[in-house]
Length: 381
Image 1 (cartoon, rainbow, N blue to C red):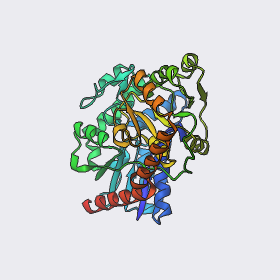
Image 2 (image 1 turned 90 degrees about the vertical axis):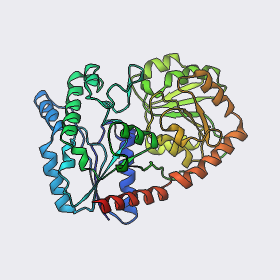
Image 3 (image 1 turned 30 degrees about the vertical axis):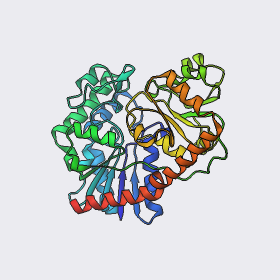
């Protein structure tokens, strides 16, 4: 099958889960004999005049349309698979895909209903824009703390809603049931949305019960790190926090001595840290959409402690592959982590996690799911 993949790449590079999903799926398809072409432009910070042009392009990019048509002519794909289309591409590229070619779009987040894509504002879950014109998102400067940037993104979203641009998509792929349900709420026909979960590559299996608990990700309010660090005062085990973000300085200041910090490290180093962890922790306080870190832990035979929120409850099996904790509960986090200081329990839950990864979240089931989705989209087209 010939596949053209489109993705407006986030500037955070390998730290972006979406960027890595796009790279992984392209590699997976190519390794199994599919002809894959990838176009992943990104937005750059430029001068004032260029910013005006970038704002216009974010709403309706004629240059992206022209380039897509050239790519279609050159590669002649059977399927065009779009991921993030804001802001370097603009949703207008979806309209440029010929109707003879199947168009699939992965829903990674809530961007079709929420400007920052996370349904989180001022330290709490927010759904003010779900099902409405995202005026509240502009008023509250939800995208990058800027009225101007928020207005550009809101304009892009609303223009393409009115133009019915997203009707051109033959099949949406939501990365979780939870995310699918939210997009049905904003008006997408449920018959046009299927669940296609993310996957993780194999990792060397952990030996023994592991050492420190591990958090890897951005240091931002919605990730629940304040709750986690407060809990660790009562946990008789080390916690390693890997990542960067605006909350780093004050998290370091409030952390007890058994919590250590590292800045962002390479993918290979992260894999090594995961396979030596006692457990991977995901203390999110927003509606997580997929839990990719959970899958990477499972691939190494490492259990997971996660908040009982969003899609995390779909992938963490409480008492079997880890434990679910009520979001925002420091006492709950301390109790769950202390429980996993039991070596025998950590080994048992890690073995279960590895089995679940092989059955549900490895490359083979991901390939089957992706190929089947493409075939359904082509048949519908």
